Structure formats: C-alpha cells, structure tokens
Length: 140
Ligand SMILES: [Zn+2]
Image (cartoon, rainbow, N blue to C red; front, side, top):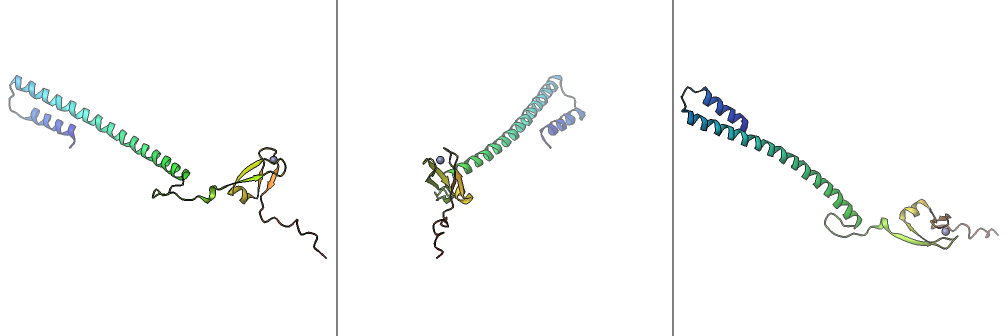
C-alpha cells in the first residue's frame, strides 16, 4: 500500500465505523486526513522530481564519460592513468620539391603514398623505397 491507499483505507475505516464522533473531534480527524493527503501528494511529486533528477544525473555521467575518454585519448593516457606513446600521430616535415615549402605529413599520408602541397598544390610522392629511376642505365 502506498501513502494514498493507506489514507483512503483510514478514511474508509473511520467513515464506515459506527462510533459517534463529537463534531470537534470529527473536524480534527478530517483536518488530519486532509493534511495526510497533502503530504502524500507532495511526496509523490517529490518522488517524480527525484526520478527526473536520476535520469539527468545518468545523462551527465554518460556525457562526462565521453568527454573523459576523448581527453584521455587526446593526451595519450591509458585507463590506468599512465601516459603512453602514440605512434599513429607521429608527424614529419618534408620539403615540397616544387616550391620548397615545409609540408607536415602524418603516418596516414605515408600509407596513402602521397600528399598534396598546401602551398602550390603539387602532388608529392611519399613512396620511401622509391629507388627505381636511379639504376635504369646499367644494362651492359
Ligand atoms: Zn609546394
């Protein structure tokens, strides 16, 4: 039985009984039951609010987890709070053969085999084992 049901039960008990209540006492009992009803209503509203807050807190926790994961990934911190080396993000400076501008490239660009110079738009070959145009004339 929740609060409402208990109060309803109490009301029924009092109204259904055949004992005569003096008007003063009856007024006091009625006032008491009204007060109890009001308290039960407030409590039920409070419980709803607590449920809403619970949901909000859960949402905030979820968001915090995402943010914390992003920060740890960005700063290279593992789940034990230790820093680690992230080889994937290593950057290299290369010179554009056309305009001489320094172009910063990462591992991904090397995997792709080329990068476009941001200054002049030249496609720069990043194939590191590119030694096949040196020894073309040794066919004697
Ligand atoms: Zn260039």
